[in-house]
Image 1 (cartoon, rainbow, N blue to C red):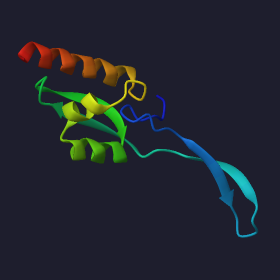
Image 2 (tube, rainbow, N blue to C red; image 1 turned 180 degrees about the vertical axis):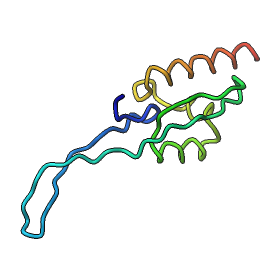
Image 3 (cartoon, rainbow, N blue to C red; image 1 turned 45 degrees about the vertical axis):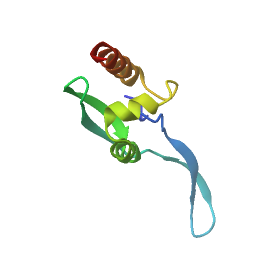
Length: 96
């Protein structure tokens, strides 16, 4: 399982541990990933995703999973999230 957010594409970054003596050793900064089930109003069911805490706040800010995925770029989304985005678009087109 990769350490990458399924909605924003946020992944590990590299940097240095710096000691009091100013010795530098490599380290990794990992994203704060959480397994969550987000409810899709259009599909009427939950969708399990592994997303960062900041992405979860962004989903709430934009008004839910459906609104977030509508504005999200396809390059940033995982294969699973892209599949859900297409399902939502298809369901909205059928309803209209």
